[in-house]
Length: 78
Image 1 (cartoon, rainbow, N blue to C red):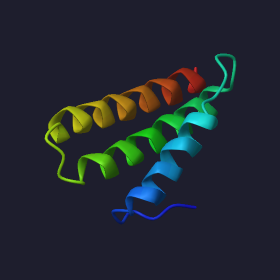
Image 2: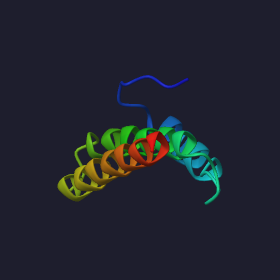
Image 3: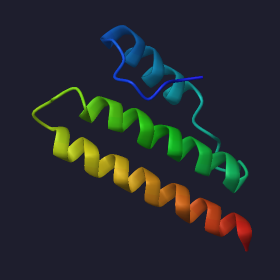
C-alpha cells in the first residue's frame, strides 16, 4: 500500500491517520499487533527522514516499535 520513499506532507499525514485509525485492539492476535508495530516503525522512519530537529528521537521511537513488533511475534509463537 505504501512506498518507502519520503512522501509529501499531505501523504505522510494520510499515512499517520491510517496508522492511528487502524491501531489493533488489546485482544487482537499478536501477529496483527506485530504488523501494526512494523508499520508504525516505517512511518516513524519516514518522519525522521524529513530532516526534523528531533529526528534522532523519532528514529529511537521507530527502533522501539520494531522491538515491540519482535516481542509480539515471539509471544505469538509460544
